[in-house]
Image 1 (cartoon, rainbow, N blue to C red):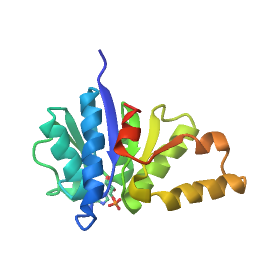
Image 2 (cartoon, rainbow, N blue to C red; image 1 turned 45 degrees about the vertical axis):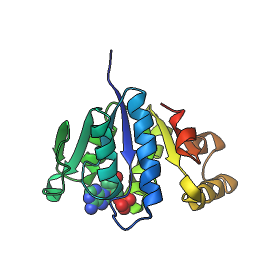
Image 3 (spheres, protein in one colour; image 1 turned 60 degrees about the vertical axis):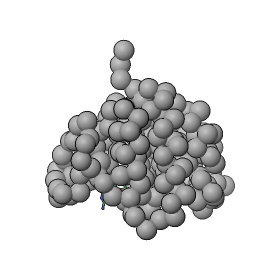
Image 4 (cartoon, rainbow, N blue to C red; image 1 turned 180 degrees about the horizontal axis):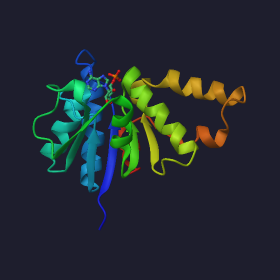
Length: 176
Ligand code: AMP
């Protein structure tokens, strides 16, 4: 059987409200229970560390991908750690073999990973599903931005629909 992989884009910050990390934990748990291996940026920082902790505790395979200039930031205990030259290669490697990409609450790094993945999905270069955890309304402004793109003809409703928003971890977990 081929390995099922879910890639998580999420915050590297440790300054965020813990409720976002709790929600992240629930989503990763659900993915592990559904038999997915977990891929993330692979750092111990912020929500990424929470994603790795949860996957490891659940006994799932936990893959991390880091650019060499982040040496020292890697999560200890990854099933496999891949080093890349730069951030662009890192994003490609993170998506490799993933059938689901999930954006958890995060900042500009998360948005970079989310938008690139959505563009690739639109162009037929990423054939997985793209989910967004809009927990506690965190991604309301992102929904509004995408709606604005549709209203102004910048984005088709079909491509807008490629970003599958869920408001709770339970709702998002249906994707696994
Ligand atoms: P952000 O959402 O701005 O906190 O960025 C986090 C996302 O971008 C993660 O999914 C990482 O892949 C990547 N990233 C950005 N900054 C870092 C960092 N300091 N350490 C590890 N990964 C990072």
